[in-house]
Image (cartoon, rainbow over all chains, first blue to last red; front, side, top):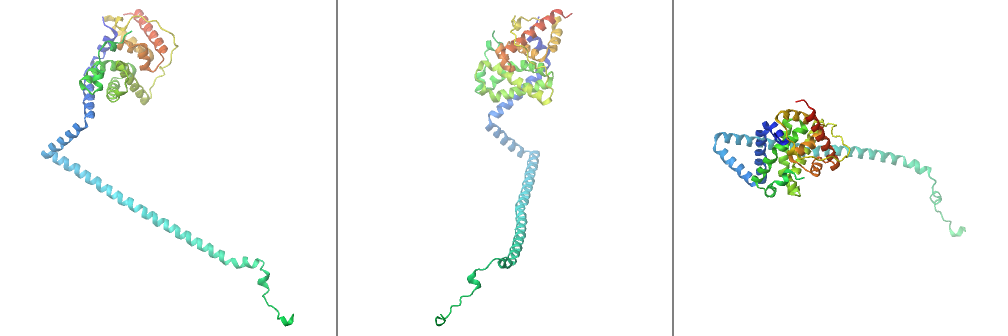
Length: 139
Length: 184
């Protein structure tokens, strides 16, 4: 006779090795997360041991080359990015000069049409009749 | 009703202090019950193993959020359930079997250890468990595995205590009835 618990455990006993492995993995990972200094220490040890072996040296040289490539690509991208605003500035300068030319044209048109407008306006009486005083003897 | 975990001395306090031996004890204690629970919800061996792993990882990271050490078991099962739900959502296979039941109070008979299954009934028992609707199967498995109280099962399953009572009652009745009537 078995209890349901015992029966269920027995039914799933094939999963036991996997569960043990999972438990070990999680504990290992948790221990690593809890001790970052230890991780750094292991990283340093790994680096030193890699430098000692020829294969390790190749690996480190490969990694270094990859970093140099990434750096070079990064610098190129930065250069392109630095040029981008200059082009934008040139573009915007052209736009401003075109606008300025248009403004000047409109202004000159407006000034040319100004006399006509002025003629249409009634002039002041004092401007129409020049001041011409009579001599006192004539009065 | 005392839950199985209540009468055990679990090294939760030591685990809080980062004692890896304590974690090992806790994981050993719960790895199989969690797996069985996840399996009964997902019906997938690999997914159930993944759920156990994710539950353990979450437990090591969030133990500080557990207020009461004696609730460690139900807290762990609650995490496992959340992981199972995430999987259902991801696979979009969430079953509509999570329907609610009427809050009828159920009768409470013997504890899980008094449900003794004869050798010739074992296969029938497992088959009947599989046939139960998922909400009933879930509460019955929690009852069988850990002898959790109604309140603890309610907390794990995010359901009302009345709903859990009802589900457990129906599940036990159905199981008993099927065990009695099933030709062996």
